[in-house]
Image 1 (cartoon, one colour):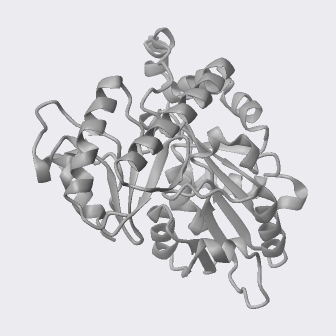
Image 2 (cartoon, rainbow, N blue to C red):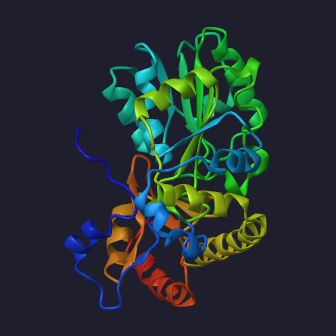
Length: 343
């Protein structure tokens, strides 16, 4: 299958628009621009690079952070997304749209039947004619920022579980909303088939470390671990994960700072005439039929944002420095002016 478009694709942006004189302000990823500080003394220790990973405290540290002991490390949640479909016989799989496109691609590539559904269908709960066996969604949604009530998702899981179904919740952006996470439910005896995906890529800003976790039933985790093989995470990534997950002071401060930054971004977009239809603490979502034109106009000013075609819209991540904020603010009026019908 052909490659999908993802945020952070600055190489492609440069091919299309050239290298901006001041470099790119990359707002296309939804990743915390101020990542967890790297513990350089640990990561530069030669033992990490000369030996295979050895037993450490990653799993218990993650278990405490997620309030769930039933977890397995994976090399980024993308690895689990790609392999989970291999663990079921051909099934009817409902995927809410819009959604992170790799979910659909993975299930299709393993021969499953995809049912495209809406957020409204999820919020209405199971119906008499609902016949799918797997439900996949992200909470909060990527890219719209929609949050689903945990009790609603538990209702869905209870319904799916009657026929050995699965509820897969991608919680990649859930770190700022722990009260919406189902992590305390995952792996319990009465929650077989509840599968959660977590990652250090977004909130911690460590996408390049490729550290993720699957939370859920032991049988599913064991089968996934068998597919991944030994040492799925490098020793350096494991040490970085331990440090980040244990640093509660940094986490609490980031929740405050990211929330304030997202409010600032939403106000800037609204003031420019780009009405914010949804947001999280890491990005804002704009619904507009002029998404590609606005993306192009901003790119010409060195601002790279993520454009979507179905539904048409834009996702704006957070600027990192004050200089990046000022470049965005100076380019927003021109993007709206040259894109009639943007809202």
